[in-house]
Length: 286
Image (cartoon, rainbow, N blue to C red; front, side, top):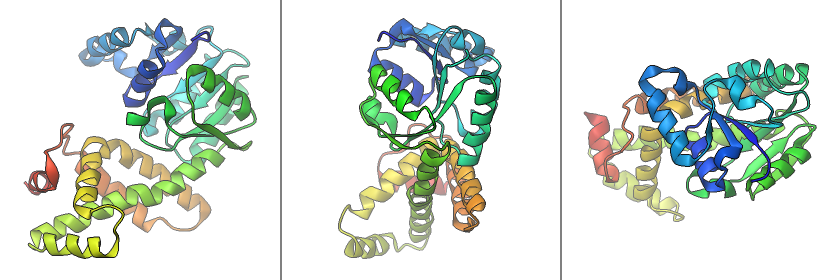
């Protein structure tokens, strides 16, 4: 990779992209977990395993780079952008890949642009694993075309510009999430109740009869798996979806329920979920 990049956040997305792209020491990486004594050694090891350059402060990650990628948790996206605004080089591109509301991205853009940087709204439209650098990306903002070229140089192969307005890409992501994450939450509510009533097989068979694309046994197992592993992070994202819908004035009653269900299951903190639907139901019923 010829260009250098400042990578903010080294969780699932950041580490997956860096490893898939073989970015090596051209990537200068900062994750807030390096500030915590309890997690610093693990983060430094993760950096070393990926071959990336460790940054012990946000300023180090942004020093001298003209392209920054923000991949943090939804609840930290705006705070990180505001902190980066004080450090970013004039004219540098700040690509915000976080799953947040368009209003949040517009606020972040205001901070970055006021500091002389160029903000681009990037929506990651599928799980990063196993897609990795082939994950679909939607881009919006005045410099979206330029950002797309820079991301392709990093190895991303599936990006598309959807407009010049910051917030347009994230609007697609947020509104789509009403369905995607909502179905997960509804699945949990349905199968937990069916299991408690001892009618699970009948309910699943009825659903299979009405939709043949994928057996509901497999779909329910998969959805609960994702919620157990990622529910807390998804709840934070869905709070941004609530903000999106409230901004549109269309209401968000179901989405608020999705926030609660994703958070409740994510709070069970089961990063290695039990095998099979029955195992997950037994665990969640304990």
